[in-house]
Image (cartoon, rainbow, N blue to C red):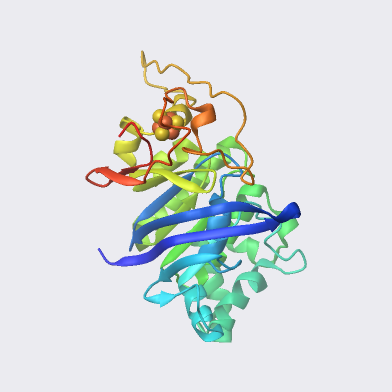
Length: 314
Ligand code: SF4
């Protein structure tokens, strides 16, 4: 399948007081193909949401290159950027904050259709109604304002708005985390159905491991701004290679009868991205660390076909 999104050694550093640098994203590379769902997982503060913003050029990169559909996002002109943004949409964590409280849903979604010349003005109402139907909302919603909906319904509206411009890819940045657990399942099933029906590609950013496992084709695990493990979803969930991935997965309850996974409790908190530990950044918390770990940074290398890991054990 064709490459749609490619990140090459992408970095985002923020200068902080005292001449220090916060390395939010550090040397991240990956490829997402058409119709592929790429899951990005890690604890909060690991850099995954910053990475989502970099992909959309909502913030500037410090270094590296991002290519979307053959266009260089990192150095895009205004004209190229508007073309990129038509093909690459984003859904945010908080649907209420991303909808204008003074705009009816018809106008909020219709605006995207008109601005991007998707339909003529007289066709807007029918097109918005079709989009709402696609995300499981009825036409009564057209004339309502965002505050009149539940959290789950508002996220459906944001999904409809993202779909309005017929994108090739959606970056979904923690789209479930502001929702009740029962609603989370409905939204992930909706995204799954839309992806299968339309062949959309996704970068799905979440700390919700069951949702990542259900929805993603490939998964990358981030820790302190770097990808530490990347592989096909089934392989990663069946046999994690990096000790950090092992610990993350051990915290997820297994519903299968009789299946027992011993919970790995990590020592201490995630270190500050301003003072990244020497050697392997995970070594202060790693239950498997040994002599080399605090001295040398492990390379991020392909240790099996399509399985990448950054650990001296492999
Ligand atoms: Fe743990 Fe060492 Fe591997 Fe880092 S390199 S994850 S400290 S075993």
